[in-house]
Length: 258
Image 1 (tube, rainbow, N blue to C red):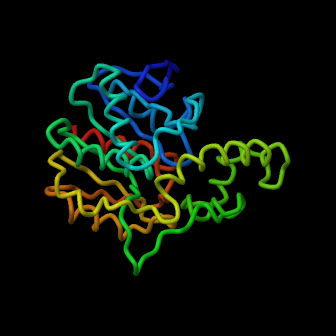
Image 2: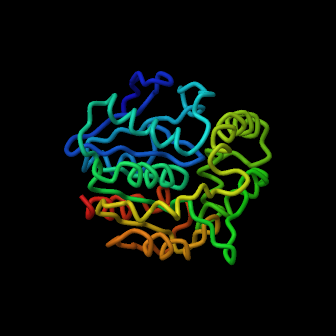
Image 3: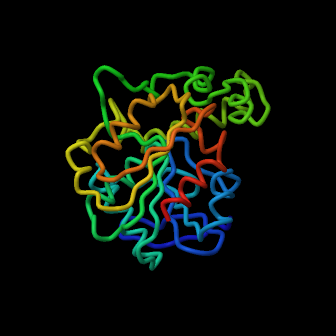
């Protein structure tokens, strides 16, 4: 994946680009995305992938003029327009799935295919979502991964969770990223999306890891019920970071909606 820059109304946006075929725009979750992301590698073997860094992530600077969900959804469309894309497949993971769903609801005639991977955006009182802003680094793997031990190694690049080399980088990056993510996810990751999903006309697939302990799999049917004709794909032995644990399965599900 190659890092490039595109100008938008609010700010210059860095994005990753790679692969060939139909255009696909990937919106990352609160944990961000890198050029080595295993799902992007899988998708770029099937599609021409564009993965913008949201403000505050990667090399994209913070942007104070993006304040709420409407701003971020419109910004998503600004990015699509700046890239000169027509009818790309919209794909989003977690917070990015929330943004992609809002984009599809906001402009239902401008997107025909949508893939939501463990998306945030709904709230079920009987199944509350874990508050990621209250978690310490060592607590994250058990909520994000089917295999917490393997997940911890992925998060730390083999270092220990209490290694100063890991903690310094993690805490600085997290403070920057979650400052942006908090606009959409804090205090709870719900901004009225449930009332707008009926507007989605796109052919939609919802992908969920059966071991997701951050956003429980029960949210999968909740999304499916609100999007007409949506297909739900459940993946065993995968947690919220299904994009790292089962990238091939996720890519196949996305390809099926194309």
